[in-house]
Length: 379
Ligand code: GDP
Ligand code: MN
Image (cartoon, rainbow, N blue to C red; front, side, top):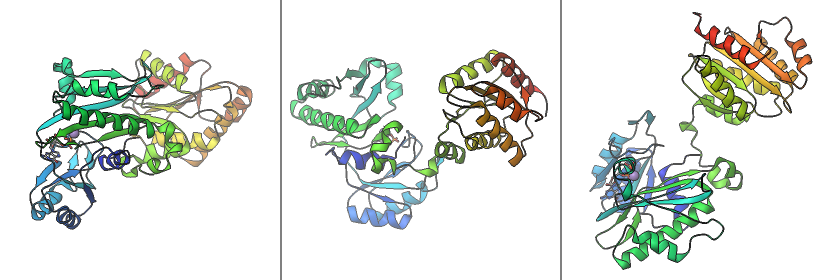
């Protein structure tokens, strides 16, 4: 789950990571009041789930409350990479001497949390990574042991040569580790980590993603989900327990099991088609899930045919068939639907679907070929 900068900063502050004072505003008047509260130069920052806000005009320094109010007017409602700014952060502005980068991810290959640190922070780190990869230092932490003080210092020394400042950066790195592990983050990025002319260390920007599978044990973080950043389709899918990813093709897919869903997408591509989505309706599928899945898929105007590919194990084919029959009765789906059901209660499923308009297929190849062909035909 993605969270906003201010939410990541709230989490980090709980672990004593140095965060400049800030307030959140949704109106110009609130922005002015926040700037008056802080009483010094502030930075007005768009709160949207994308990076590169600075370049897009979504981060602006303000010397006075007047100026903060004016910037708030420009940034609120602004479109940044397709997202509308509804909230802004008014943060105590920090004097910048140096801008470093500190990132952390869970690396699946080594099964460890991995740090990436660079003295070339502030700007697009992707550009640094592609043009001057030697400027990014990586370090994998043994999660059983955690990060020792010595390791943190060694890492800090890669980007900061002044011993006293390096100690502070090392302390920052250690606290970030605690926050990362403690909140079950899958990603944490501090860019820039600022060193002031007085040699203070501050997290000026913060980005964190939290592992969805761990949200059950972080009620406070789970409550940070911003519904305005989720499309209505995605929200319905999540609430129904369906894993859904929208894609650009025209063959809608309803499949059970992530592996079979991936395979089905591959087979669609093999027959020259393009999937409109990834959708795993999961294990024990109720007819309701199938109805919801079909509604989500048919709300995409690109979809020209629908392919239902179910391997009945725990999922019973007759449940899925009843869902299909119900969906067809409830909604007016005019798209061709190709159905391939095999496995548990396959025969019962065939009886349920007898006499309906579904195109049935016995094998995955046959089903996919038909669905791709039907998507090609003019409606
Ligand atoms: P991003 O563009 O979405 O990554 O947003 P950031 O929070 O990283 O801000 C972009 C840039 O704005 C930073 O790299 C800084 O150069 C500048 N900036 C942000 N906050 C401050 C601040 O408190 N003081 C100063 N002087 N510059 C800031
Ligand atoms: Mn940044």
